[in-house]
Length: 88
Image 1 (tube, rainbow, N blue to C red):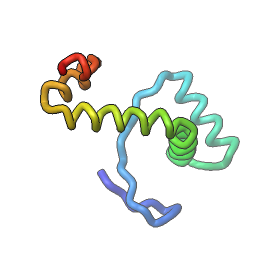
Image 2 (cartoon, rainbow, N blue to C red):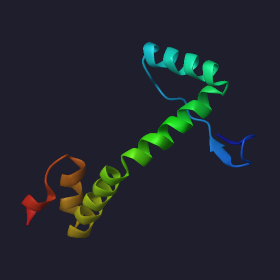
Image 3 (spheres, one colour):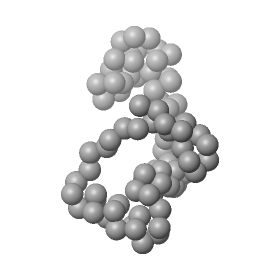
Image 4 (cartoon, helix red, strand yellow):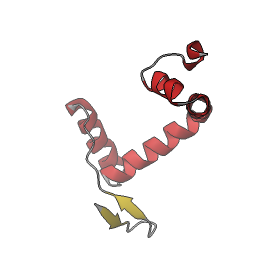
């Protein structure tokens, strides 16, 4: 389901995520302390995490792109957690 965000006027997807009870409580408490919604807290956390790990994410995307460029067998190997280079 898509909803219009009140914060920035952007469209947001409504999608529940599964987390442990401990994590759920941490989200609830942190959001209350920071006076923001739980969804805003999670959004900020994901943005910060992906920013800090951008080089790892880029490397993963490059690896996936390389596997796809090698063909279907390499892409399947990549998705299965195998090294696509072993198929050459």
